Amino acid sequence: MSLEEKKSETAQEALDNLIAGVMQFREEIYPQQRELFNKLANEQTPRAMFITCADSRILPELITQSSPGDLFVTRNVGNIVPPYGIMNGGVSTAIEFAVMALGVQHIIVCGHSDCGAMKAVLNPSSLDGMPTVRSWLRHAEVARTVVEENCGCADHNTLGTLTEENVLAQLDHLRTHPSVAARLASGQLFIHGWVYNIGTSEIRAYDAARGEFRLIGDGPLPMATPKSRYV
Image 1 (cartoon, rainbow, N blue to C red):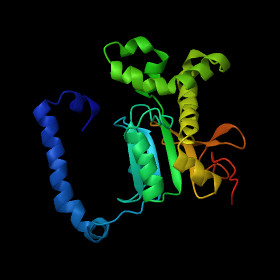
Image 2: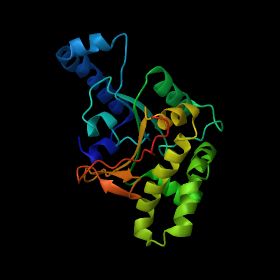
Image 3: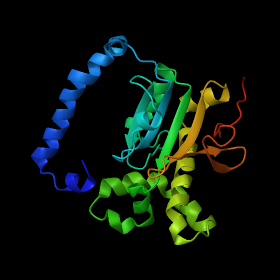
């Protein structure tokens, strides 16, 4: 179905398409992976926690070609990670559970191109009438300030630069969580900052050693993890 056809859908047609997908999954997809789902019925051992935007165009399992049970996914507007102690909400709870209960060894914070949340950070008046979104995106203010005071970039580059700086800001926030800080220090946890380009499929990851985002697949894998201190 084209984007134009989706735009013209009625509410009932949209729901009918979702239900059709549910039926197709149950009748065609599930039987092909019955053994996997039976194994997952009572336990999970994800390879990584994936924190990304709620944008409907971002599918973590698709872009990483992961199977059910591989990723512990948390999504919200702007791939935000509130600093520890500011908000005892879903993101903080998910981080603590992923690290302490599931023992994940990797946490990925993934931003993306054409991010509506980042556009709103650049244009706060667009949030008039959306007070909860405005409040939530205050966690991205540090990124906006960094860009305003240091970037000097042309307007057409500002959104991309802000998207990158927001990922870095959220990695900084992530390190304030005690469970994360402790395991980073001991070398038991690794953190990653990614930016996914919707139109090209490319993912650039932050290289802490070089202080820049680099394309995944072009040389050694860029790593955002600080050096451990208690290995």
